[in-house]
Image 1: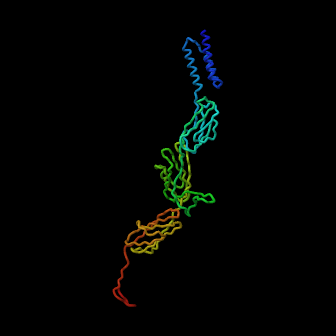
Image 2: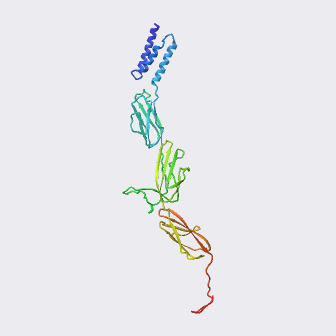
Length: 356
């Protein structure tokens, strides 16, 4: 009687397990469970045996229904970037993908590419239609940050006849080759307000000049420009999401003014004597004459006179039409003496000799 009773209990357990598993792909697990039950000694008077059977069934069913799939993808991305997302340990699919703010190249398959157009918190989800009810959806939470920008800001130079390239303007019928401009030998500082030093890494490459500094608090670049010609500045910015932006800037190095100062001197310069200096140049268009910060004129020539003797250093600042400047100097030695004073002591007549 006891064996018959245990057989009924075994049959009920077998039926319950079969009903749970049904005709799913887990039917092989059912066979293993039944095999274990057949090998167990089922004794109605032995509660330990029944407890072991119950515990075995619970653990078996938990193993059957556990769900471990995940999404392999970046959790920190940049807007305007595209990233691959892959389902890992899936149950075989079919898979349906979705995202709240991302654009998918396709919504099916084990791998999808998602492109991001706006910043903020985002999600990528996949629905595994072969998974158990309640465990079919898996979600990856993502932070979308602003992309890096390798923008440099240059001083605004005017359009000038010396420049070999021209700026692009509307209503032109052809593509215009454009370069930023600097003056030969000048020191230029170029800023990038989009660089965040706490979350970005910046590198610079310069041709046509030498880098003086690239490590101040704003990530600016300071360059000592070379001689006239052409150069290049390349900027690469990498942010915390490992996104990179690279830009190259063509640099046209403009000529400085070439000036020669010519004086109308034929002998010693005395105090009170006027001296004219002339600036001769093929590319200078404006002039500024001074002596010890005293302004003497803005033409290509200037007249100087001094009340006391000494050496005077005359300074000339000349500019090209591209606003490239050059400073030139001319030294004048002034003698502190005047010519003789002749006094007329009496009247005289023609052809009459007088002594003074």
